[in-house]
Picture (tube, rainbow, N blue to C red):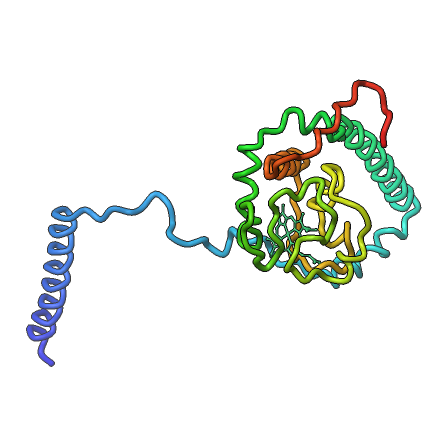
Length: 226
Ligand code: HEC
């Protein structure tokens, strides 16, 4: 290859590189790329680093070869236990006011709120007078009614074996956890966790009937139960 051809080749390559760069510069200034402030995906760096538990566990006893380390670990464990204990004390003190008697809960419970909360029951229960049995029995007048006594409904053995009638208290306890209150009964409903919600529902159930029993009296600061 002659020298002039070499030069021409180099010149051509340089020119096309220059043109490409120039065009790139020109178009980029036309349409400035905008980078999002946040990545659309979570980079792997944000994931917790993988921990080799086997290595960690193998490392433990080794570091405990020094007596000083052992003492520190034992002190730490003792501290954890003490902290746990004081936490239980704190939490049991904190839940104390929540253990209200049913009378007090019912006195401040709103039957309209209860009716809303009782929407979950309507997939299985009808609340109207003379209404049908569904998956569960009709609940008109259930407060004060004998347990498992609604005509035309085939109750489970567990429910039929329950003596007596539904009081506010019994309904309140049953609805907390039907499976625990009447083991083996066939109401597949987890229960209402919050005592306030349960009191509202029970209060609402009390409005369904011609002659519901009177509400239990709120108990004062005394702790007489029944
Ligand atoms: C998944 C369906 C289902 C849901 C939801 C349900 N129940 Fe029931 N319930 C039943 C069945 C079934 C029985 C009959 C239980 C038995 O015979 O063992 C029953 C029984 C009862 C009884 C006893 C009635 C009697 O005549 O002795 C009461 C009270 C009751 N349910 C209240 C409620 C309330 C209040 C709710 C809503 C908070 C509710 N249930 C939600 C299915 C349901």
